[in-house]
Image (cartoon, rainbow, N blue to C red; front, top):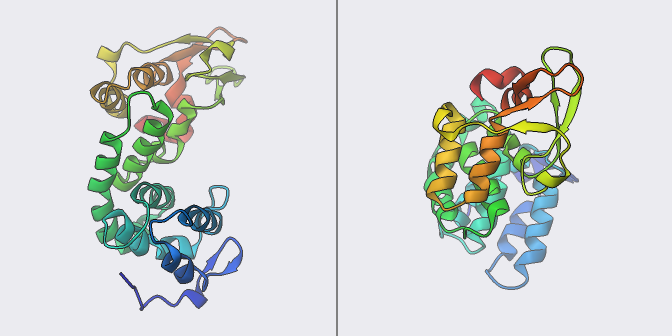
Length: 236
């Protein structure tokens, strides 16, 4: 579905003027050549995690693909839109609220289809879902479940390298996972989502993330999620 009112020549992406974006979308036909096109779209619209004016303008096109109104891979469209929407400020969310509302049920459907033996994909798609829902911080940073991050001790300020996911054996920090029954807020919801989807590994990772870690310098036990979220820790 075309969106002729967009003046792409007035928008920018990672490499400059965005007037090449409509042509890239027009090349998507669901065939093997799409992989190269998606690579170009990701590179231009979400370069190393950065988004641009053209990234938001592409949301209607991505929504058309995600909902089946245009050719292309549904999951790719949801993923790219999720990364973009996670960076939207309130005016941008308002401007594209119709697209976000359409993307939300598609994100739910994608999440439900992820097999239990693919925990990484489940984490990423949960992050996209949170982006469409407007959940702060975790819509951008839930991938800490998959990678090393530093936790700052609130008592002495020391930094501790932490791994809570599949590379737990490489983590030297003393972790104290949360009791799932005691989780609240977003931690409880993420854990319940993982359990409900049969993602047992992700449920364990969430329990560790929303648990505590012991500071190697001063021995203080402190909350990992609160440390990761920093100033937004009150919503963790």
